[in-house]
Image 1 (cartoon, rainbow, N blue to C red):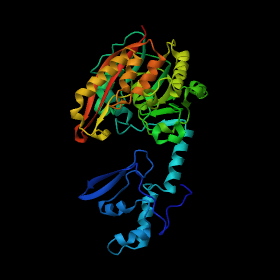
Image 2 (image 1 turned 180 degrees about the vertical axis):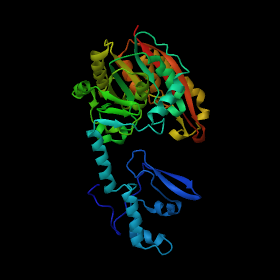
Image 3 (image 1 turned 90 degrees about the vertical axis):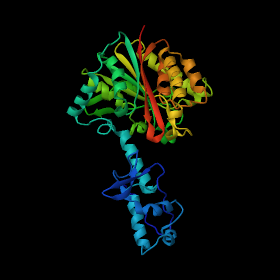
Length: 412
């Protein structure tokens, strides 16, 4: 428990409600509640309040005190009751208070010190019971044969929720079912590094120094390699891995490896942040870091037959959920045309053409797989691939959609 006390003043401004929370109206047993969903896992799990408190919550804006609130409250509610309510909010970490901030720092620091990453997707995106999970994946993979191509070096595949893309995962990962590499270097989208701007400024590559605990077993990290990479500061590598605490882009790929492979292997997990600066200048500081990083990967594993590359990324994110004015259904043809070019440039390893495409309107469809895939192409510039699949998740009720695809790379 934090040694910072809960908010306890009737005259000081009440800390505002956290802006990163989703407050979702729900009904249960005929009653209406407000459910506080915290993607970052700081708030008490399952915390909800009766919907009747909604007007009071709207008054907690970071400026008003308990005393200031009293005139707005009808009935016999006194300042002591109001203070108890505010303490309840603070105790469950839904206020942007010092108590909450101390708790958040503790969670992040403990994760960084830990050598284990526990799955955040098991039990929600797929069964967490090993036997049930095996049956679930057996059923999915029996529909696809594993026609493994010779000299396979890398796979670019989605990281979208398997509940909406299981067939796409199966099509992609069936192609590497019979491989037996000793090491897997993973380049994956970092979705959450932007939450920690003070930690990741000027460091586009984030090493994840963790073993991965998954329902079908624990996948070990390559400790020696990770320790060696932490010394390459000129390559923009950051070894503080708190950005991975709630990340799914690596563990979803490892889920399928843990199912398909029964040999021993270790992983070098790396998150790749946005490469937006390349849209303005290719030869600036970021471009130099990218080249330095790619050189390290080349020198270590370009010709290593026992090292395989996984690249984790989805394609377009579009529609109203992602900030577009128009619903996704009106954009399907434009997005599919853009995605087709993106995947073709990736498969043909045409880096310049891919970057030129992304420069158009500065990534108009929010291709989250661009940073890791472009990094890989920069690392293996002569490697060619073939597109294995392409699909779209139409989230019609939110007028939004996400596209995703896969590319298999082989040495010529």
